[in-house]
Amino acid sequence: MTTEELKARTVDGFERMFNRGDLDYIDEAVAPGAIDHQEPEGTDFAAHLKDVISTLRAAFPDLRFEVHDVVCEGDVVACRSTMTGTHQGPLRIGPLSGLAVTGARIDVPHMHFFRYDNKGNVTDLWHVWNTLLLARQLGAPAPDLRVGTPA
Image 1 (tube, rainbow, N blue to C red):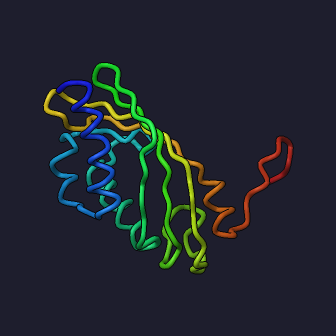
Image 2 (image 1 turned 90 degrees about the horizontal axis):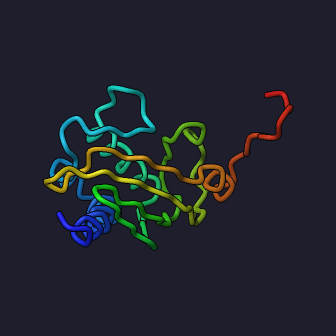
């Protein structure tokens, strides 16, 4: 696929999967054996992605990802995005699990790197998002991360 096709596929993936909740698209877009480098080795990337999207859309029914910048070099696409929504349902994400519904609006930056195969399917994902900012926006107690502070 061309650079422009990979960039368009990336933006379309956010629209279809996160913004519309089209979980079937994951089976088309993720290569067998794909790796999410934030998850333990052996994690089924497609199943995990479906769970993440379902979890986020349950907690934030008006979930939106706006992709701001997309850069492609070879088979790797990097993008910067912002996740927005209103906390209206249960949130099952790490230390935020069990947080009471707040009704708060969120606006959380993300960075993604996707590697694609020659068919245009994702083979690798590296992802960073500001979970501390998410916790603050939801009014959750933030951990003290200062060096030398007892846990």
